[in-house]
Length: 370
Ligand SMILES: Cc1ncc(COP(=O)(O)O)c(C=O)c1O
Image 1 (cartoon, protein in one colour):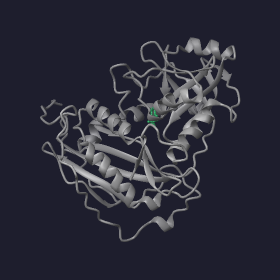
Image 2 (tube, protein in one colour):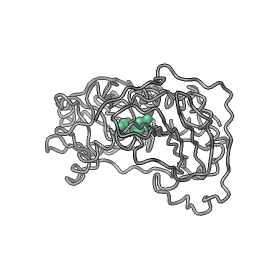
Image 3 (cartoon, helix red, strand yellow):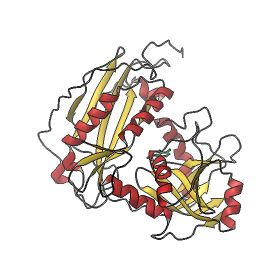
Image 4 (spheres, helix red, strand yellow):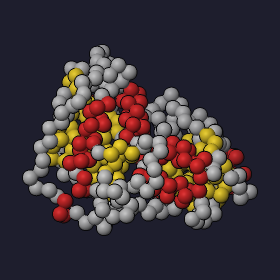
Protein backbone atom coordinates (compact mmCIF):
# COMPACT_ATOMS: atom_id res chain seq x y z
CA UNK A 1 0.00 0.00 0.00
CA UNK A 2 1.39 3.42 -0.87
CA UNK A 3 2.14 5.94 1.86
CA UNK A 4 0.56 9.25 0.93
CA UNK A 5 1.72 12.73 1.75
CA UNK A 6 -0.15 14.77 4.28
CA UNK A 7 -0.48 18.40 4.95
CA UNK A 8 -1.94 19.86 8.10
CA UNK A 9 -1.07 21.70 11.29
CA UNK A 10 0.95 19.56 13.71
CA UNK A 11 0.60 19.53 17.47
CA UNK A 12 3.48 21.95 17.92
CA UNK A 13 1.81 24.46 15.65
CA UNK A 14 -1.78 24.41 16.87
CA UNK A 15 -4.58 26.14 15.00
CA UNK A 16 -6.01 28.38 17.73
CA UNK A 17 -9.67 29.28 17.98
CA UNK A 18 -10.25 32.75 19.39
CA UNK A 19 -11.76 32.65 22.87
CA UNK A 20 -14.24 32.96 24.40
CA UNK A 21 -15.80 30.07 22.59
CA UNK A 22 -19.49 29.63 22.43
CA UNK A 23 -20.63 26.06 22.88
CA UNK A 24 -24.25 25.46 21.91
CA UNK A 25 -25.98 22.86 24.07
CA UNK A 26 -28.74 20.62 22.79
CA UNK A 27 -30.34 19.09 25.87
CA UNK A 28 -31.75 15.58 25.90
CA UNK A 29 -35.53 15.25 26.02
CA UNK A 30 -35.38 11.94 27.90
CA UNK A 31 -32.75 11.75 30.62
CA UNK A 32 -31.55 8.26 31.52
CA UNK A 33 -30.64 9.43 35.02
CA UNK A 34 -33.69 7.90 36.78
CA UNK A 35 -32.65 4.45 35.51
CA UNK A 36 -29.25 4.53 37.22
CA UNK A 37 -28.63 2.93 40.60
CA UNK A 38 -25.81 5.02 42.07
CA UNK A 39 -25.26 2.52 44.88
CA UNK A 40 -24.25 -0.16 42.43
CA UNK A 41 -22.04 1.30 39.68
CA UNK A 42 -19.79 -0.78 37.49
CA UNK A 43 -16.80 1.26 36.24
CA UNK A 44 -17.52 2.73 32.81
CA UNK A 45 -20.82 0.89 32.26
CA UNK A 46 -23.18 3.87 32.16
CA UNK A 47 -22.69 7.11 30.29
CA UNK A 48 -24.21 10.45 31.26
CA UNK A 49 -26.85 12.17 29.12
CA UNK A 50 -24.61 14.41 27.00
CA UNK A 51 -21.35 14.43 25.09
CA UNK A 52 -19.06 17.05 23.60
CA UNK A 53 -18.23 16.74 19.94
CA UNK A 54 -16.11 18.77 17.52
CA UNK A 55 -14.71 17.95 14.11
CA UNK A 56 -11.43 18.93 12.49
CA UNK A 57 -11.44 19.37 8.74
CA UNK A 58 -9.06 21.00 6.29
CA UNK A 59 -6.79 22.31 9.05
CA UNK A 60 -9.60 23.99 10.96
CA UNK A 61 -11.43 23.05 14.14
CA UNK A 62 -15.18 23.37 13.63
CA UNK A 63 -17.87 24.44 16.08
CA UNK A 64 -17.82 22.43 19.36
CA UNK A 65 -21.26 21.27 20.49
CA UNK A 66 -22.80 19.52 23.44
CA UNK A 67 -25.45 17.08 22.25
CA UNK A 68 -27.40 14.16 23.74
CA UNK A 69 -25.18 11.07 24.13
CA UNK A 70 -25.66 8.77 21.17
CA UNK A 71 -24.10 6.73 18.44
CA UNK A 72 -21.75 8.27 15.90
CA UNK A 73 -21.61 7.51 12.20
CA UNK A 74 -18.29 6.18 10.95
CA UNK A 75 -17.31 4.94 7.52
CA UNK A 76 -15.74 1.45 7.44
CA UNK A 77 -12.78 3.13 5.76
CA UNK A 78 -12.23 5.67 8.56
CA UNK A 79 -8.48 5.65 9.05
CA UNK A 80 -8.74 5.09 12.82
CA UNK A 81 -10.23 1.65 12.25
CA UNK A 82 -7.22 0.51 10.24
CA UNK A 83 -4.17 2.39 11.46
CA UNK A 84 -5.13 3.23 15.06
CA UNK A 85 -4.71 6.98 15.05
CA UNK A 86 -6.58 7.41 18.31
CA UNK A 87 -5.65 8.90 21.68
CA UNK A 88 -7.56 9.48 24.89
CA UNK A 89 -7.47 10.83 28.42
CA UNK A 90 -8.98 9.60 31.66
CA UNK A 91 -9.83 12.15 34.34
CA UNK A 92 -12.42 12.86 37.02
CA UNK A 93 -14.86 15.53 38.20
CA UNK A 94 -15.88 15.64 41.88
CA UNK A 95 -18.63 17.17 43.98
CA UNK A 96 -16.93 19.23 46.66
CA UNK A 97 -18.11 19.56 50.24
CA UNK A 98 -19.44 23.08 49.57
CA UNK A 99 -21.60 21.77 46.73
CA UNK A 100 -19.37 23.10 43.93
CA UNK A 101 -18.13 20.78 41.21
CA UNK A 102 -14.49 20.61 40.20
CA UNK A 103 -12.33 18.83 37.64
CA UNK A 104 -9.02 17.49 38.93
CA UNK A 105 -5.74 18.55 37.27
CA UNK A 106 -7.29 19.57 33.97
CA UNK A 107 -4.13 21.36 32.88
CA UNK A 108 -1.87 18.33 33.33
CA UNK A 109 -4.34 16.11 31.49
CA UNK A 110 -4.54 18.63 28.64
CA UNK A 111 -0.76 18.78 28.30
CA UNK A 112 -0.49 14.99 28.25
CA UNK A 113 -3.25 14.86 25.62
CA UNK A 114 -1.21 17.24 23.44
CA UNK A 115 1.88 15.03 23.83
CA UNK A 116 -0.10 11.95 22.84
CA UNK A 117 -1.55 13.76 19.83
CA UNK A 118 1.86 14.87 18.68
CA UNK A 119 3.28 11.33 18.94
CA UNK A 120 0.38 9.96 16.90
CA UNK A 121 0.79 12.70 14.28
CA UNK A 122 -2.60 14.21 15.09
CA UNK A 123 -3.40 17.94 15.18
CA UNK A 124 -3.31 19.80 18.49
CA UNK A 125 -6.61 20.50 20.11
CA UNK A 126 -6.93 24.15 21.14
CA UNK A 127 -6.82 24.57 24.90
CA UNK A 128 -10.13 26.40 25.08
CA UNK A 129 -12.02 23.62 23.31
CA UNK A 130 -10.62 21.06 25.77
CA UNK A 131 -11.03 23.12 28.92
CA UNK A 132 -14.17 25.14 28.21
CA UNK A 133 -15.74 22.13 26.52
CA UNK A 134 -15.15 19.88 29.52
CA UNK A 135 -16.32 22.55 31.95
CA UNK A 136 -19.55 23.07 30.00
CA UNK A 137 -20.15 19.33 29.68
CA UNK A 138 -19.57 18.65 33.38
CA UNK A 139 -21.87 21.54 34.27
CA UNK A 140 -24.57 20.16 31.96
CA UNK A 141 -24.38 16.69 33.51
CA UNK A 142 -23.46 17.60 37.08
CA UNK A 143 -26.49 15.68 38.38
CA UNK A 144 -24.67 12.56 37.18
CA UNK A 145 -21.93 12.93 39.79
CA UNK A 146 -22.98 10.33 42.35
CA UNK A 147 -23.85 12.02 45.62
CA UNK A 148 -22.17 9.28 47.59
CA UNK A 149 -18.86 8.95 49.39
CA UNK A 150 -16.16 8.32 46.81
CA UNK A 151 -18.41 9.07 43.83
CA UNK A 152 -17.08 10.91 40.77
CA UNK A 153 -17.82 11.56 37.13
CA UNK A 154 -15.16 9.86 35.04
CA UNK A 155 -14.31 11.94 31.95
CA UNK A 156 -13.09 10.35 28.75
CA UNK A 157 -11.84 12.87 26.16
CA UNK A 158 -10.66 11.17 22.97
CA UNK A 159 -9.77 11.91 19.37
CA UNK A 160 -10.01 9.63 16.34
CA UNK A 161 -8.95 9.85 12.68
CA UNK A 162 -12.06 9.98 10.52
CA UNK A 163 -10.83 10.52 6.98
CA UNK A 164 -12.20 7.81 4.67
CA UNK A 165 -9.30 6.12 2.94
CA UNK A 166 -7.63 2.71 2.78
CA UNK A 167 -4.17 4.01 1.88
CA UNK A 168 -1.73 4.17 4.78
CA UNK A 169 -1.65 7.86 5.53
CA UNK A 170 -2.04 10.48 8.20
CA UNK A 171 -5.69 11.49 8.40
CA UNK A 172 -6.80 14.97 7.34
CA UNK A 173 -10.03 14.70 9.35
CA UNK A 174 -10.56 14.06 13.03
CA UNK A 175 -13.28 13.90 15.63
CA UNK A 176 -12.70 15.01 19.21
CA UNK A 177 -15.27 13.95 21.76
CA UNK A 178 -15.77 13.83 25.50
CA UNK A 179 -18.07 11.28 27.07
CA UNK A 180 -18.57 10.84 30.80
CA UNK A 181 -19.50 8.04 33.16
CA UNK A 182 -20.62 8.06 36.81
CA UNK A 183 -18.35 5.96 39.00
CA UNK A 184 -18.75 4.84 42.59
CA UNK A 185 -16.23 4.46 45.38
CA UNK A 186 -13.41 2.26 44.20
CA UNK A 187 -12.37 -0.42 46.67
CA UNK A 188 -9.40 -1.83 44.86
CA UNK A 189 -8.62 -5.48 45.30
CA UNK A 190 -4.97 -5.96 46.33
CA UNK A 191 -3.02 -7.19 43.35
CA UNK A 192 -0.93 -10.25 42.68
CA UNK A 193 1.56 -9.08 40.08
CA UNK A 194 3.86 -10.91 37.73
CA UNK A 195 7.06 -9.31 36.46
CA UNK A 196 6.83 -9.69 32.67
CA UNK A 197 10.05 -10.85 31.07
CA UNK A 198 8.82 -12.19 27.74
CA UNK A 199 6.35 -9.73 26.23
CA UNK A 200 6.91 -6.00 25.84
CA UNK A 201 4.44 -3.16 26.33
CA UNK A 202 6.60 -0.32 25.04
CA UNK A 203 10.15 0.31 23.91
CA UNK A 204 12.17 3.51 24.26
CA UNK A 205 11.36 5.58 21.19
CA UNK A 206 7.97 3.91 20.83
CA UNK A 207 4.55 5.11 21.96
CA UNK A 208 4.60 4.07 25.63
CA UNK A 209 4.36 7.65 26.90
CA UNK A 210 1.35 8.38 24.68
CA UNK A 211 -2.14 7.44 25.77
CA UNK A 212 -2.94 5.85 22.42
CA UNK A 213 -5.31 2.96 21.85
CA UNK A 214 -2.69 0.63 20.37
CA UNK A 215 -0.72 0.46 23.63
CA UNK A 216 -3.71 -1.07 25.34
CA UNK A 217 -4.67 -3.53 22.59
CA UNK A 218 -1.10 -4.83 22.54
CA UNK A 219 -1.12 -5.45 26.29
CA UNK A 220 -4.21 -7.67 26.29
CA UNK A 221 -2.58 -10.98 25.32
CA UNK A 222 0.26 -10.94 27.90
CA UNK A 223 -2.21 -9.77 30.57
CA UNK A 224 -4.64 -12.54 29.64
CA UNK A 225 -1.86 -15.12 29.82
CA UNK A 226 -0.80 -13.81 33.24
CA UNK A 227 -4.43 -14.07 34.42
CA UNK A 228 -4.54 -17.69 33.31
CA UNK A 229 -1.53 -18.23 35.59
CA UNK A 230 -3.43 -16.70 38.52
CA UNK A 231 -2.05 -13.13 38.44
CA UNK A 232 -4.09 -9.95 38.28
CA UNK A 233 -1.74 -7.85 36.15
CA UNK A 234 1.75 -7.74 34.77
CA UNK A 235 4.51 -5.37 35.77
CA UNK A 236 6.22 -4.34 32.55
CA UNK A 237 9.98 -4.22 32.24
CA UNK A 238 12.17 -2.47 29.67
CA UNK A 239 12.01 -3.84 26.13
CA UNK A 240 15.76 -4.32 25.62
CA UNK A 241 16.84 -6.43 28.58
CA UNK A 242 13.76 -6.96 30.79
CA UNK A 243 16.02 -5.64 33.49
CA UNK A 244 14.38 -2.40 34.63
CA UNK A 245 10.84 -1.90 35.93
CA UNK A 246 8.54 0.32 33.88
CA UNK A 247 4.90 0.36 35.00
CA UNK A 248 1.71 -1.71 35.23
CA UNK A 249 -1.08 -2.00 32.64
CA UNK A 250 -3.10 1.05 33.68
CA UNK A 251 -1.08 2.33 36.59
CA UNK A 252 2.36 3.62 37.45
CA UNK A 253 4.12 1.58 40.06
CA UNK A 254 5.59 2.80 43.34
CA UNK A 255 7.47 1.12 46.19
CA UNK A 256 8.60 2.14 49.63
CA UNK A 257 12.12 0.69 49.75
CA UNK A 258 14.23 1.32 52.85
CA UNK A 259 11.70 3.97 53.87
CA UNK A 260 11.97 5.91 50.59
CA UNK A 261 9.15 6.27 48.05
CA UNK A 262 10.78 4.91 44.92
CA UNK A 263 9.39 4.88 41.39
CA UNK A 264 10.85 4.50 37.88
CA UNK A 265 11.67 7.82 36.20
CA UNK A 266 9.65 9.08 33.25
CA UNK A 267 10.87 7.91 29.85
CA UNK A 268 9.39 7.41 26.39
CA UNK A 269 8.21 3.97 27.46
CA UNK A 270 6.00 4.86 30.43
CA UNK A 271 2.97 7.06 30.84
CA UNK A 272 3.45 10.33 32.72
CA UNK A 273 0.69 9.51 35.20
CA UNK A 274 -1.18 12.40 36.79
CA UNK A 275 -1.66 10.40 40.00
CA UNK A 276 2.05 9.52 40.03
CA UNK A 277 2.90 13.21 39.74
CA UNK A 278 0.39 14.18 42.44
CA UNK A 279 1.75 11.56 44.85
CA UNK A 280 5.37 12.61 44.24
CA UNK A 281 4.38 16.24 44.83
CA UNK A 282 2.56 15.49 48.09
CA UNK A 283 5.10 13.00 49.49
CA UNK A 284 7.35 15.58 51.24
CA UNK A 285 4.31 17.08 52.98
CA UNK A 286 3.73 13.64 54.50
CA UNK A 287 7.34 13.39 55.63
CA UNK A 288 8.24 10.97 52.85
CA UNK A 289 11.35 11.28 50.70
CA UNK A 290 10.70 10.48 47.05
CA UNK A 291 13.19 9.10 44.59
CA UNK A 292 12.58 8.74 40.85
CA UNK A 293 15.20 6.32 39.62
CA UNK A 294 15.66 3.16 37.65
CA UNK A 295 14.87 0.04 39.63
CA UNK A 296 16.24 -3.28 38.46
CA UNK A 297 14.30 -6.50 38.87
CA UNK A 298 17.34 -7.84 40.67
CA UNK A 299 17.36 -4.99 43.18
CA UNK A 300 13.63 -5.38 43.79
CA UNK A 301 14.06 -9.11 44.35
CA UNK A 302 16.80 -8.68 46.95
CA UNK A 303 14.92 -5.86 48.68
CA UNK A 304 11.77 -8.03 48.78
CA UNK A 305 13.59 -11.06 50.10
CA UNK A 306 15.31 -8.95 52.77
CA UNK A 307 11.99 -7.39 53.87
CA UNK A 308 13.10 -3.89 52.86
CA UNK A 309 10.05 -3.23 50.66
CA UNK A 310 7.37 -2.13 53.10
CA UNK A 311 4.84 -0.95 50.48
CA UNK A 312 4.15 -1.57 46.81
CA UNK A 313 1.22 -0.04 44.96
CA UNK A 314 -0.13 1.08 41.61
CA UNK A 315 -1.04 4.75 41.08
CA UNK A 316 -3.78 5.80 38.67
CA UNK A 317 -6.91 7.90 38.25
CA UNK A 318 -9.36 5.01 38.74
CA UNK A 319 -8.42 4.04 42.32
CA UNK A 320 -5.71 6.58 43.22
CA UNK A 321 -3.68 3.79 44.84
CA UNK A 322 -4.08 0.02 44.48
CA UNK A 323 -2.08 -2.05 46.96
CA UNK A 324 0.09 -4.85 45.63
CA UNK A 325 0.11 -7.91 47.87
CA UNK A 326 2.51 -10.15 46.00
CA UNK A 327 5.07 -9.92 43.22
CA UNK A 328 6.21 -12.93 41.26
CA UNK A 329 9.72 -12.80 39.84
CA UNK A 330 10.72 -15.69 37.56
CA UNK A 331 8.38 -18.04 39.39
CA UNK A 332 9.19 -16.89 42.95
CA UNK A 333 6.30 -15.10 44.66
CA UNK A 334 7.20 -12.47 47.26
CA UNK A 335 4.55 -11.28 49.71
CA UNK A 336 4.25 -7.64 50.75
CA UNK A 337 3.34 -6.63 54.32
CA UNK A 338 -0.30 -5.77 55.12
CA UNK A 339 -1.00 -2.05 54.86
CA UNK A 340 -2.78 -0.05 57.58
CA UNK A 341 -3.84 3.52 58.30
CA UNK A 342 -0.22 4.53 58.91
CA UNK A 343 0.89 3.29 55.49
CA UNK A 344 2.07 6.03 53.15
CA UNK A 345 -0.27 4.84 50.40
CA UNK A 346 -3.30 5.25 52.65
CA UNK A 347 -2.21 8.66 53.93
CA UNK A 348 -1.51 10.03 50.47
CA UNK A 349 -4.78 8.67 49.11
CA UNK A 350 -6.68 10.40 51.93
CA UNK A 351 -4.79 13.65 51.37
CA UNK A 352 -5.60 13.65 47.67
CA UNK A 353 -9.25 12.93 48.49
CA UNK A 354 -9.30 15.86 50.93
CA UNK A 355 -7.87 18.24 48.31
CA UNK A 356 -10.34 17.08 45.65
CA UNK A 357 -13.31 17.53 47.94
CA UNK A 358 -12.18 20.87 49.34
CA UNK A 359 -11.55 19.55 52.86
CA UNK A 360 -7.95 20.67 52.49
CA UNK A 361 -6.85 23.91 50.81
CA UNK A 362 -6.02 23.46 47.13
CA UNK A 363 -2.58 25.05 47.48
CA UNK A 364 -1.38 23.75 44.12
CA UNK A 365 -4.37 24.95 42.12
CA UNK A 366 -5.28 21.43 41.03
CA UNK A 367 -9.07 21.88 41.13
CA UNK A 368 -10.92 23.67 38.32
CA UNK A 369 -14.34 24.69 39.61
CA UNK A 370 -16.87 24.51 36.77
C1 LIG B 1 -0.45 2.79 31.02
C2 LIG B 1 -0.89 3.65 32.14
N1 LIG B 1 0.02 4.03 33.05
C3 LIG B 1 -0.31 4.83 34.09
C4 LIG B 1 -1.62 5.29 34.25
C5 LIG B 1 -1.94 6.23 35.37
O1 LIG B 1 -2.13 7.52 34.89
P1 LIG B 1 -3.07 8.56 35.61
O2 LIG B 1 -2.60 8.68 37.01
O3 LIG B 1 -2.91 9.81 34.84
O4 LIG B 1 -4.46 7.99 35.56
C6 LIG B 1 -2.59 4.90 33.33
C7 LIG B 1 -3.98 5.36 33.50
O5 LIG B 1 -4.43 6.20 32.82
C8 LIG B 1 -2.23 4.08 32.25
O6 LIG B 1 -3.14 3.71 31.34
